[in-house]
Amino acid sequence: MSFKSVLTPLALVAAAFLAPSSHAQQSSAAAPASPLDNVPDRMPFDIPYGAPIPLARAEALIAVAVAEARKHDWKLVVAVVDSGGNLVALQRMDGAQLASISVAEHKARASAQYRRETRVFESGIQEKGNLYVMTLDGMIGSRGGIPLVENGKLVGAIGCSGGTGSQDEVACKAAVATIK
Image (cartoon, rainbow, N blue to C red; front, top):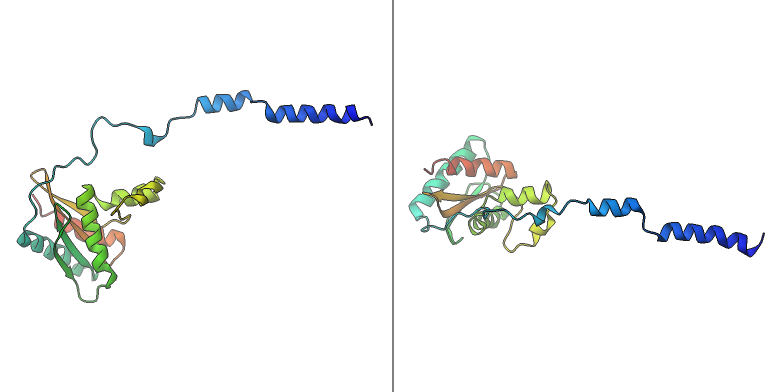
């Protein structure tokens, strides 16, 4: 076997690997743009900030969330923050885990500051694979934080913690349903 007879097949194999294929060119030209490149016409979650929720209203919302939790024998912590994300009121039900104190407040604060339910973050991470969401300051990727909107303005947010995310969310929604 000559050197030339070995070199020729090797050169053909190398050329096949190095040459751009028409299939590769077609697939890259037809690749869809990233969904993150979509530019919506309107701002999402563009709720104007309103006057901060007063203490009496925050306590009334907490009472509704706690009543809902008691119906199910859930032990939750419920926090309400104002439109700036500052704590207005918090209640820890007997037996609720201590860690849920800061988590409930965190859910409420993130919901107020980002003007959206914390469920949006959870969905973005778990269902859509938008892992960049976890890099946002003050974000929490767990449902149970819901904005409080009165007369089209964000007056605060409520956060619940201590159960599963879906249990926390049910208690929050019961309170939010009382806002007209």
